[in-house]
Image (cartoon, rainbow, N blue to C red; front, side, top):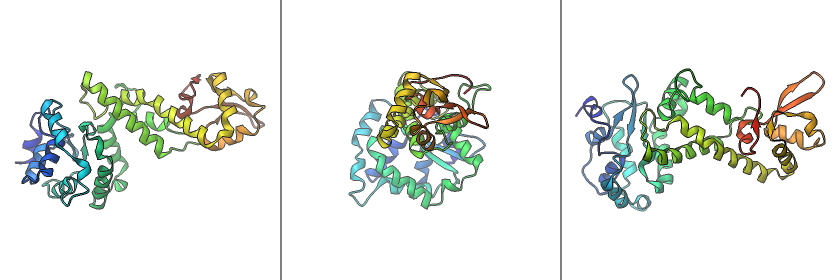
Length: 293
């Protein structure tokens, strides 16, 4: 069977990564043609492919219960290792193969980290992707624009809101946003299926609050000396804030700027006039943004 024949099939197929892993776990005779039979091509112009979860019906739930991912690393036969071997034998050269996050395989976290490591070791090193390749994959995952038309690009929206006051982007916040967005999409997809991207842009919007809450909590745990400043910002309830509103916190403000809780919003040659709280922390502090974003 050719790749073109396989991807031309109805994308609502019963087959998916759960069935494929179950076949491998049970020791069935699986070859590269069987893998192709599960793969969906996401773009006519790019070598981007998806291993879908499968059709979420009663049979799917039954197959899911039969899988025992925790045992895979206690036994000699590991379906994930076999899957890597098979994808290396495909008659086409994918830039990436994405595994649908909605499989329900919650016990696969550690094995999947090893799977990603093996993909990198096998030559699919995402660190070597060009900016254009990375952007194409991102658009498959989260869509191109937040609300279509001429609205913000999703990658710009995320990048701007995950930055602290120094313009730094911590990997923890980015990973938390992706994790929260996947959880939200799983719930929403049960009510309103969506097929334009793996997660819809709205999932990013709905997940930002939880990420900001976690960022604020982590900041307070690490820098308890900022508690008074944080409480002041919450009482003021807005951003930007006048520098005079924080004038009596002369020791806390420099630390807040250093760790990215505050950034200069307006200043003269002589002094800072206003500070801004970046969105990464502002939402978790329940502070309202005033003025342009």
